[in-house]
Length: 153
Image (cartoon, rainbow, N blue to C red; front, top):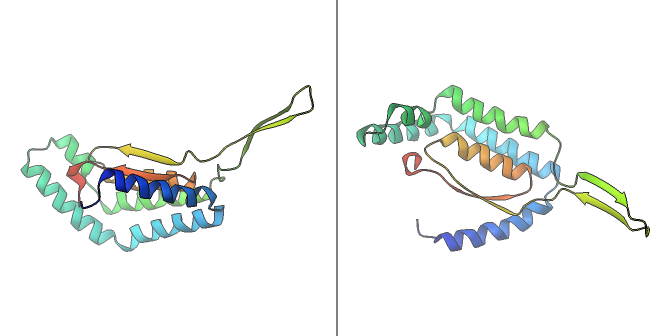
């Protein structure tokens, strides 16, 4: 990797400003494109996963960890389906959570907004990449994801 974590974090922070303002249609369009890309590239994803599995087995990875790392047609399809499920959910950005009026007449509203940047470090679970990225996108957040080296491909 040629970019430092600091450089990547700065780029993600810049992206978060754009994502925070994205409308529902744009976010759902991106989610749909993500799901379509997973389906269109399933063979390539499974081939890369097979390389990760072979390297993991050679390194003595436990059967349980190898199972978490293992992708199949069904698991990739489930990843895509999960992303599409998010499209059907209400956009969480801009939802009024609470409103009240103070005795002095000041009206106060509590409205949901994106966090900005979400950083996630996780082990050898390639499906987490798709799940975390999709959830962050739907909620208007940029994500800085660091999966385990076991799923590098």
